[in-house]
Structure formats: C-alpha cells, structure tokens
Image (cartoon, rainbow over all chains, first blue to last red):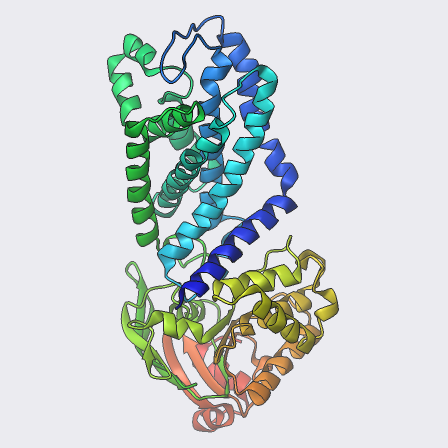
Length: 267
Length: 240
C-alpha cells in the first residue's frame, strides 16, 4: 500500500464524518445545550459562592464563567467521544464499522483515523461553544482560539481512544447511562473543570490526588493554558503520553468479536 | 481466483462453532453455502473477512495466506453483509465514495468506477438520493455495487436476500450469477433458502459447524439417494 492510499482513506473517513455531521446538525446543535446551561445557569449561581483568586494562566481576577469555560470545552469532547465510541461498537455506526474493517489498510490506522475524524467534529462544536461564550464575556485572546487547537485535538483523541477501550472491553458499560455514571461524571467532577485543584486540596487531600491522577484534569489544563496563550508542559506532556497509551491499547486490542459488529453471537 | 479453506475450526469460549471445515472454491464459479440458522455460516464469513481472527486452519486466496498476508487477501474480497451496512442518511454515491476511499482509491477514480457500477445495476439516476429512500431490493443492489468497486475476485454474500420479497430475491440471485459469467467473479452465497440454489450449482452444506456435503447439487442428491436438494437438505440437517 502506498502513501496515496493512506491519504485517500484518511480523507474519505474525515469526509464521511462531516457529511454525517451535516445530516444530523440538529442533534449536534442540541448537544451544545448541556455545556451552555452549565455556563449560563450553573456558573451564574456559583460565581457568588466560589471566589477565584488569581491563578495561572489568568493575569487578573476572573469570573467563574471564564474559569469553567475550558472545562466545558473538555466536557463537550468527553460526551461526544464516549457516545461516538459506543455507537462504533454497539449502535448506529455498526454498519459503517463493518465497511471500515473490510479495508486492506492496517486496522490501527483505520481506527485512529476514525477516532480523529469524530474528534475533529467535536472540536468544531467546541469552537461554536466558545463563540457563544463570548455572550457571557468569556473573552480569551484572539490567538488563543488558534493556540488551543492542538490541545482540543489531543483531548478528543485521548477520550475517543478511552471510549473505544471501554466499549470493547467492559461489557457492563455497553449503554450510555452506565458510561455516564461510571466514566463521564467521575472524570468530569474529579478534575479541575469546575474548581481549581488547590480548592479541592483544602477540602479533601485524597480527592485532590484522585483529581491529579485523572487524565481529564490535565487535558482541561492544557486547553485552559493554551487558550490563554500560556505553555503548560506538564499538562501537555501528560495528555500526550496518556493519548499515546490509550490509542495503542484501544487499537491494537480492538477485537470485533467483543462488539456487535458481527451481529449477536451465539450464547 | 481459487480460494482454499484449510481445516478451519473456531470456538466462542467453550462452544465449538466450526469443526475442521475445508473446501475449495473454483475461480469464476457460483457456490452456495447452505445451512440452517446457527450452522456457522456467519462465523465462517467472519473468518473469511477477518472480522474474526482465525484460531485454527488458514484460508488461501490465490495462494496467499489470510493469516500471513491479510492486506493482500482483503484487496481481493468484496463483501455483502447479512445486516445492512449502508449509511441510510448519506446518498448512494456518498456511500460508494466512502467505501472506495477505504480501499485507497482517489475520489476521481472512485467516481468513475462508482458510476459504472451504478449504471450496470440500473441505479445511476438514483445516485444522489439518500439510501433511506430506496427499497430493500435496491439497497441490496447498492451494497453489491459497492462491494465490487475495488474490483475484487471473490464476492461473499451472507444471506443477502433476507427481508426481500420473492421477486427481488430472484432478481438479485440472477444478477449475481450473471456477474460470475461476465466478470469471472468467484461467488460464495450463503443462504438457508433452497429455492436460491440450482441443481447444477456447487453446494456446500454446513450443519452444526461441520461441512456435511460439498459438490454439485445433483451429484449430492444422487449420492444421498434423494429427489432434490430440499430433500437432501432435510435428510442431512433435519431442517427445511
């Protein structure tokens, strides 16, 4: 197989994802309601309770809306990645997965490309969210919108790979409710998305350490710092390393027989 | 292209699903894989398409091992799955272009080949319609057209007529037979419907994971001392 074959395949998978996005644009728009509610309603209620002192990457006192916006970007990607991964092995995308796996190109390449394509669509949603966040005065520097792109793509690949890993290997989590309770909510709440970790440390040191071990924390921090044009090598390094590990495990460990791609297997 | 399955066994956990299955498919021939539900047909297709990993045995496609040279082997196979594998929201052409891209074809080449196949299947005028608007028979035709886009030598069809009316079933069956004659395509057609098989066809009968018969339909009937394939099938499997 030549490089051109890989390129045509890559473009084909990306194109299909965007075509589906366009076909289901109302569903994608409604997926923005959740983070917007957090930003507008939850943050309004909480800003009075939770004072944020000056912490990097911010140079001044900030509103609570400004603080949680990067976490909500992560939340959009988190929900989409888990939903996308589940649909790859159990649900709407089964037909497309059968076709995908018939390709003569290496399976890890196909799966990473597919995860990346789903991730890029999520990133598009994040940008729409950030534009809407301007309405509540979340105003990162203009170049921040560009600088945050690598962090967003990395996060989407990391969470997509995690979703695929979970969907393939943990039978008990084959529906979205299970994933929401046991993966999405713990990852989101035990991170720096809603509160700075020094606050968490004051409240409970052991919870603080759980948050530190949560890769989502570092993804959110990578998004936060790059959005405000600050370089955070720790957050980036951890997010990138975890992405590589999850992607390797998810793609090389992928087994169609552990999914519903072949239909229902005999009991 | 000649396909040789050698001594294939497969089990799901403790449950054996295929037991030492061996056969050879001859180039350009129509082969019917007959078996009642649960015989192991879909598992065999899963192995031939690499959706399942071979546990024991091997498959040789024109001499190339599916185990050792999977990419080369996969380039030669076109598949129509039992379950719909089309994206209903996308148009017929978009579905075809997606498949072609997965096989490394450029968009330009894919469009030429796609239109050629759709014309052959008398579906070209519907190329820009969402698949959702097509009836079951036409969807199946699109799936076959798609499976042929990368010009495979072997076409695998896993119960392709499930859910179709009698006329569509017959039309699809005739169409695939014509492909064997016109393109020299080797076809393996899995079914549990005897009426889709002709006495002169090469027939493989699979039951409870074992290959019970392999030969021309009329020869099998003669060997079993039965009047027709339906009776043979019933005698061998207790089904039908």
